[in-house]
Image 1 (cartoon, rainbow, N blue to C red):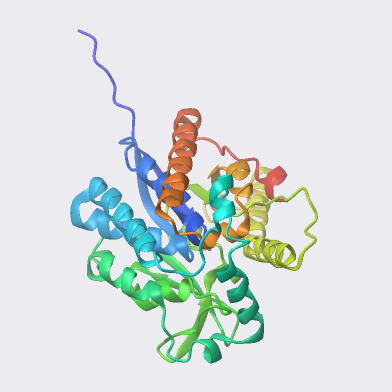
Image 2 (cartoon, rainbow, N blue to C red):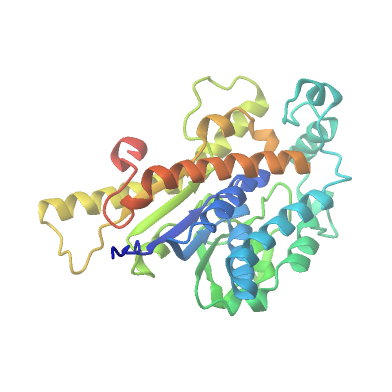
Length: 343
């Protein structure tokens, strides 16, 4: 009688980028990855929307396993849409008629952009109202997150005083830590934790990769990328220039860390480093560059539920395609040519 040898579990760490409502793409990726029994997620590093996805993942896993994580992610993103139901930043009738998800021609978007340039959030929002806080507090149980022993978490925020990254681990993760990681300084007042103000972690790590290298024993790092690397057209308008500057800024730290990973790999190949002391990383990425790039940067503020479902479905397809092509390569080889992609 023939016996079937089971396929061993493939262990990965995840790096989840931030990017506003485009984080729903990552929701779709996680939803599909959680369906794959041969894949085990050991650790997650996330920033901004990536941090929220990571917290939802840990909450759900601690509560009721993989299906619990999928359910928590869906509840979170649905709640995000419900909270934004009365936001003035919505698509114009023309954009809806054209089937365009951009809010760039929304009067609310244009006014908020103008006010953001003229007034700081300390002037325009003196009561420091953050609509994300209630949603995060209601959906995510941080006691459950901190109790999730099966998953290491690393959330990045930017120390306003020093300009350095602060990495919050699972043990000290809180509502404030997640909100700090998502605190865009032209929209919200800095989030203070133990007397220290923090801004969005994307300025110094979107997300931080080094905790996944030094704080885990897993070699396979899977980046879920939602910020476009390349724009073929030169931005001409003020909004286009600002949007592209943000994309470049929020990708810069990732480029630096990828260069370091490539350098260590090259030194190991040349025998210049001790393989007992330095870990060769295997790099993977799930992305949908063309799909997300076509949406435009302003759509990161579009929280309409059909749009979030659209992004989720793109993420599920991208993850399914990646698993089909690359699952068996985990543990053996990189599926991203780091040198050509990031150097």
